[in-house]
Image 1 (tube, rainbow, N blue to C red):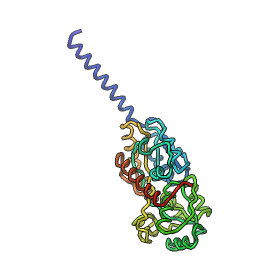
Image 2 (tube, helix red, strand yellow; image 1 turned 120 degrees about the vertical axis):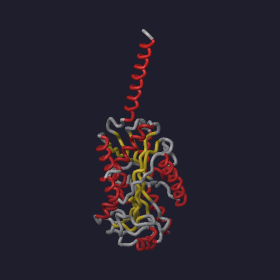
Image 3 (spheres, rainbow, N blue to C red; image 1 turned 30 degrees about the horizontal axis):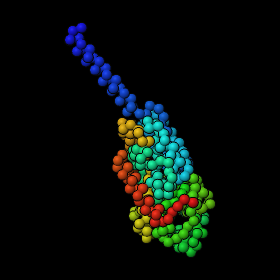
Length: 328
């Protein structure tokens, strides 16, 4: 064989090798090629579901693959987080957590996972203000001022439901008590869905809920909103006063939802997940649903999202310490 033919063969072999490598890389970034599971660490019907299920529908339309919602409730969302942390890091198991997972390290001393070390932060999906909602048949107060007065006159008589000890609902309630000088009995549930249903049914008095899960019930008159957290009214509920208007300028509580993948998920797969999720969030359908739930669509991705979570962990640790909140 002449040198000319040897060189041609070498070039042909190099081209074949490059094609094979290119094909391998393409196979990785072609994710998803089969259904993807998204673990939602709360029972169906809560605030997480209000965003997870519409997101699942748009994701499936964009990618051509089903995004299966796997509700794994318990222990303030930590059971589902533990399961997700141990999943195979191939991009086919994702975790939709929430602000609760930034609170958990301060109230659950023996977690078997670390939200910062065992997961890769992908993107923040929604940011929703907290809202104080009451059952109008059990609570006669129609303003926050009247509600606070009633709570002060009857310490411990009123009660509030939460999605579980250590969740944002729980800490929002404790922060409210701290800032208003009231005592309201905490009743923890296994998720926001069951807690909200008991509020609607008239089995509890009040809930410090994320606006996303309460929105449809406020509009239907099943529950009454007395206040939204923060220093501005929410566009979806312009008639509900904000905390700053009723004398609570430091009551800035939001329920946020975000997406993680197990640590070790390949970088190219992470990038594809983020890209597809951003496409879903940009659809008119999701924009409308997020707006009706009183939510913003944040543009916080990757390391910036990780830094946000780290700041939230520190913030809520301080609230837990100041309020003395603990597991019941």
